[in-house]
Length: 130
Image (cartoon, one colour):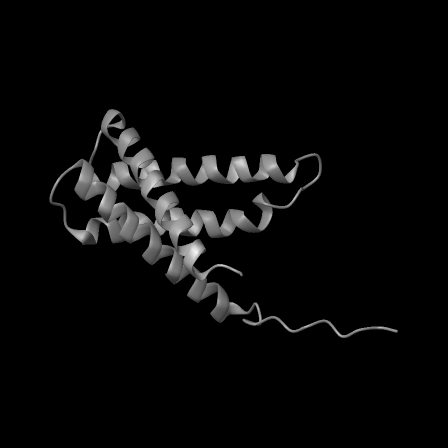
């Protein structure tokens, strides 16, 4: 007996991708602004909004292929590549937007990663699956 597949909540269409991108962009912008304020001092939030678009787009584009095993690449290696490429893209965007040297950009990228990780874990614990 065949069972009908349950429909996706979002439908997986263009609207779902656009909303996911906007939520990721907002999340990265908030965490980047917190990290930049902590690291640099008083900075305009518009800079964080500009720089946060790049890691949001990169992480969403790579997420489709990064977490699944493609050919000889295992899923855990794919996640590591996804994380590394997103951090590099974040560093390039931060360096360009905030006009920082590589020496100043690296700690800010790591701080942004730490803020995003802590906030992401907290939000997952609040809203995640039960």
